[in-house]
Image (cartoon, rainbow, N blue to C red; front, side, top):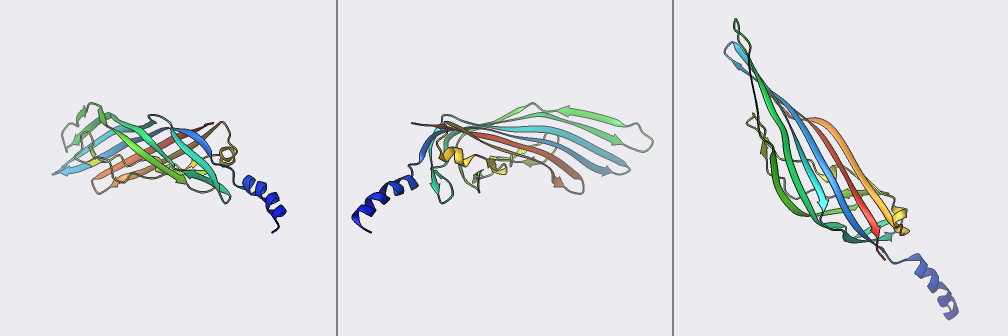
Length: 220
């Protein structure tokens, strides 16, 4: 390549590799799990059925925006230092109640019920990491350790809050980020219904909803 040709190619190379755009990124997220369960037990000629319910919620909120650079690698976005460094994670457990029915031959049906006070889970300050997960997709990495188990009201079983942001793969406009748009929002949403316990004497269903938003604001 001649000297003049090299000079002509230099501006084109600079245009092909623009500097990464800098964004201040904030997170808001919520994981909600509603449980209902039924426990049955036979006692001689009697049958005992106990049913209960409760609701658990985790809230994720960045304490302050994290600076993330968005460049291009091949044909997609490249997130550099993709983490929300300081995220407050708080949790509550509420709607905790149960009702029990005892039926015996020749006797009246006996019903008892009870409830438990709401709980607040221990607040945590966490570093949440995410990554590129395909064209116009973002995925949060799951936590390295499970949360502490919480006993269900009226039932001698516990279950950690296993729902997390990683269940919802987010959608984002990568081209808007790469072009340096002033504000871009990524959103993730997930919903499921399943049985978390399904045994001979116990069935527990869970309705799980995960929603989060990442808001990218361009820095100059």
